[in-house]
Image (tube, rainbow, N blue to C red; front, side, top):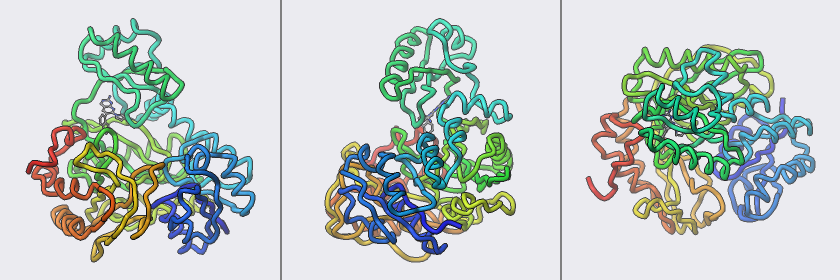
Length: 447
Ligand code: MV4
């Protein structure tokens, strides 16, 4: 049993973790940069340690400073949240050396899934469907051109160190191969210090559907069904929902089996997400595995009534999983409320929140660290709240979301609330008729 957990994160997720710790009777330590002195995670934790100046590199990303906070406070476990060091295998390793339990998978598991080619090879071997493409890294442009011809255009070039869309290039015909190859290498080198590139058949207009999985320390893995994350802009998710409107019982069975197989193949410990691309014929392919708790985890929590942070902590303490896969009993949608101006290319809009009213009522959940008078610092991500609604049907859930968005009052900064209001009225969204390209042809000013 853990007595004290240090939370190596900030914002809403730090608060979310503190809440579960309190319910479990576990003491909490917050860490904060000088920009976050007035944050709620600092107030609500049992102890708080300032770890440095605003720049993440000198605070939330500084392993030595975090380890100093661990030593001072005598915490026996550490929760990394999402972002920052959550998927840093070296950090998980340092935690082990310091004798503090990293609440998450092992360094080996993080490393395996962090390198996209290794991840894909592992999944291929395990019998999880993968997108046709190169076997490992492409050696040179010549091999690339030859293979692209075999696979058939369009193809996509991806950085093995990438993820989240960075260092990707789509090639539509042979004459464009060489320039795209060079750009992909350059981008990958600049972004990750690793110019390893692999190739896949390009799946046009795919759905992004991910499965939540949980594995214990004894090799048991279950899935908690899916989230549809197709509503995204430039690889930033804006809305997530469960169940997916594109899902069928048969597809859920198949994808769920594949997700569990994926987790079992690496004896995955903790909560994780298997991301799939699904084409219009409902063929599905493994894309990546996220080895952390995700921003959109509340959608799953709401449809199966399950505390994912509690599960992470129990698994880290060595509790065995009991029971079977979980299937959605409700419908939930999450809207990400960012301090960004949706009428101005989603430009960040940090600053002081002069007045605030968050929506409430039956089936409405708001996960946020902000309050009236709080100043959103410019140094970190722009997520200020997650609005999650839950109902018995998707139609009811959308209506509830519209009501809740209308109740949301945030003054002093621009937010994505008007974007969500417009989206909830969209006929195609309401019909569940969307894929990852949906927002490319979405006009906020038109109805
Ligand atoms: C793809 C793809 C189509 N075909 N791979 C984007 C993020 C990165 N993790 C992988 N991504 C994609 N990989 C093949 N072979 C399309 C995307 C993609 C995408 C995927 C999920 C959600 C949104 C997306 C938006 C654009 C492209």
